[in-house]
Image 1 (tube, one colour):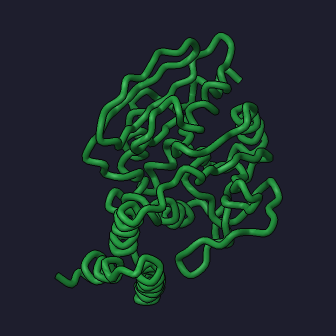
Image 2 (cartoon, rainbow, N blue to C red; image 1 turned 60 degrees about the vertical axis):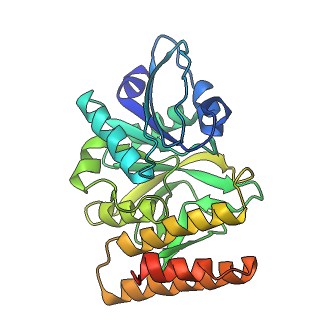
Length: 280
């Protein structure tokens, strides 16, 4: 267990939330390993910087970036720093994932049993019990699976999402890492599309985490900001064909209309025109 832990960096991205209040951070603290420090890199996209306390059994590196370049740049930076420290594995996390205490033990067992696999993922569920990750990836969007068995799966059929993915560092760079232009939405799918060009299989570990969206803001302003990221991600993601563009255009247009009707405000449709179609 110690050999795996010393080869690992956990990368957590935070945005406008106190680190101590993050579900992912509290989950990490419960994974403390005796006689071994766990390495944690925190990339903070918040407006204001935070003070990170020292914890016994953890080596924590903190980077504050008020420019908020998004999760893709944060993950790329974390993996780059991990490589400089000769780490073999990185565990990617957002701030709102509750993970079981035995996660690292389960990952170590899965790696030992599947040494050829370079990408591992937990099963993440929403609070209502629906499976959030992995998901079925069709027409450039994810759909909830009704069930998923632990074990080997093809990335042609299903895709894990960012939080909880364990990735081999060398392979991360070989496939090109994350696309910095895709700041939030579609960032994980873009990475998986890159990854599966070289490695088609990944392993779903027999652990279940909870993805918590209960604290997400639903105000008009927050939805407008989030939709701007969505449009920019759909615009900047790599597209292999005109069919890809048609799919992204359809779902972005559909979402803009849906949000415009919900909030009785045409600003969402205007964002679609300006940020996705580049109409000025």
